[in-house]
Amino acid sequence: MRQIILDTETTGLDPNQGHRVIELAAVEMVNRRLTGTHLHRYVNPEREIDPGAMQVHGISNEFLQDKPRFADIAQEFVDFIGGGELVIHNAPFDVGFLDMELRLLGMRPLVHWCEGVTDTLAMAKALRPGKRNNLDALCREYGVDNTARTLHGALLDCELLAAVYLEMTRGQETLAIGLDTARAETRPSGHVRPRPVLCAASADELAAHAALLEAIDRESRGACLWHPAAGEAG
Image (cartoon, rainbow, N blue to C red):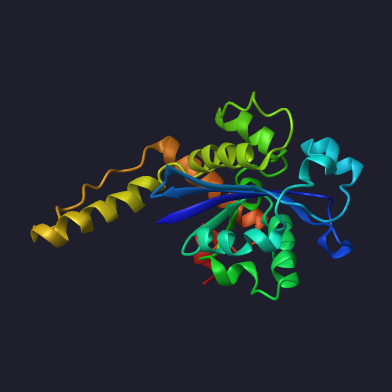
């Protein structure tokens, strides 16, 4: 399973008002392990950066003057994300900007180049309803060290989000990686796959599971298929 943790910085808040991407970072994770492979580019937006945006990321117009345009890195970018699932915090924001950049070049939208998009902000809201769920808050919640984050920066934010995402989805590595390993060992050797060991959930685990389903059901306004009430309704 190949996933790409992705983040952008921009000249402002709305691509429909002509704002552009100025920094792009993508970090590769395979089977829930960071590979050390990443893509990180600064981009000349060919326009001025809003003062408010500059206060957030600290990137100046002067710094970007000699950087490549998005047109110069577009193919490299779509090649890098090809075959991977994108993991983005507040995905509609980044996807909106990247779709606009691709559209300006006559290229297909982002979903054409990747295997889907996971929004960690939506996940966090389901897990922590009513709480702050920005990246700093999630770092505090999951014990991820973000002391180096004084300003927003796409590459650092990708690395922090990768750590947060792994904590938010802890337990899935047993399901995903274990099955991949079993298949890899079975195919070359012909050995029979060992019988899985079934472990009963503890009372605390069952309670945590019920609380998670309740949160998802609230967030989806009763559309959670795994909620006990859904079975009763059927």
